[in-house]
Length: 180
Image: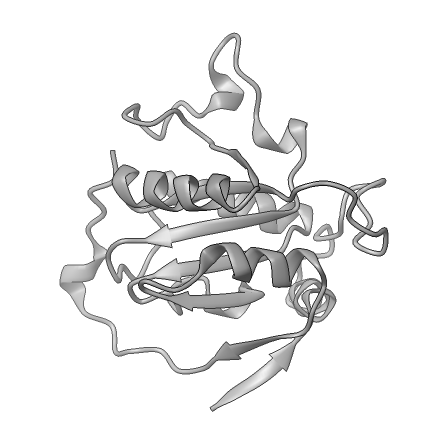
């Protein structure tokens, strides 16, 4: 089963669940036509998966931001490292989390998703088990090997998108995150 959800509907649903502060930042209206390439925050469960998608997005013409540099620990993030800038301060159009494993909980390297959702930014989840744990907040889910660039273009363009439903049963061995 699938249904059509618009990114504004996702933000409204988040607000109705008690997230009253989940609204776009002033000046970041999705109503204005895009004049340049999309800016995408890319996070995920594993550096290799993040970098694979970042390379694909850059080849597709997107500007890519990260919460931490490749090969470095997820904490402290760029917001807390002297001389670096938090992607929230730069601004971005969509956040993508690339899940290399079907974990039931977010990994430390995926904390940027929570920051972005709090700010009202649309989310694309991609990879293995993409419906969990962010499924309820995702504007679009992309299966493993799917086209992340097109997904971001759809979400940024405010095109209604289909979101697949259904979550698998929880498996305790999935609770361990090995993100760097």
